[in-house]
Image (cartoon, rainbow, N blue to C red):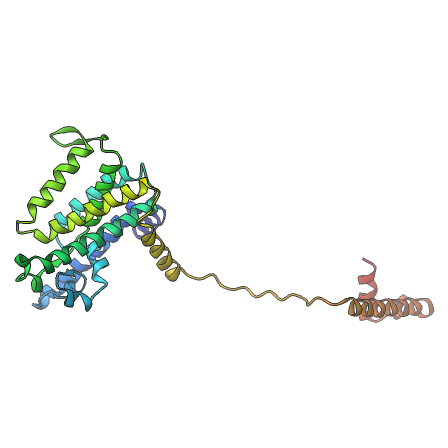
Length: 290
């Protein structure tokens, strides 16, 4: 189909923002479609739990991949819509100062930082003790907030246009968001706000270390490159047969034999004529005559 080809082409040629949007949308659609079949069969949709990030350490040890998978997983439409819009807007600002590899690296760093802070808080603070066995985290918010906060700390005085408000410097937006996440810990979405703060820390750390010449997301970039090399099709090996080199003795011996054969053919022409030559002798004479 032309649509499918267009999607593959735009994914291949698009920016890292485009690719992240495609990956998140694809995962969202796959899980929503699978959920339909679970719903029709009357079964609880427990498959998604294997890709959400659990708060309990024991449960996480049974699914360690969830520390990465959760940051690409959404289930509610408004959740993914808002996250991808923020990724698009602030990802473009981020790319004004850093390259695409660093955006992907920070996306992963922010998601992991948010997930670790979420699990740590739920296992340290007594208020969450009852919630640990049944709490799970999903969504790209921590990853995207890391990108947003990095843009804030990189150019705090840069102004953006906010709907119904007008132009606002990034630093004020950043302060408002950080305060809202701290206050939100005592609400029903405590886990989400803790993860957001993890993204804030990752974004600040990235910019702070970059100013000192350090790249804290380099390990994530290298990990992605390594995985890409694993799944990338290997080039077919072409076998070329080459004639083995001969030493001087062999070369001189072969040359003398050829010269002797040529003299024999010439003598035959002198005594019996050209037409007396065999096909092989004519080919030999022709080869030496080049």
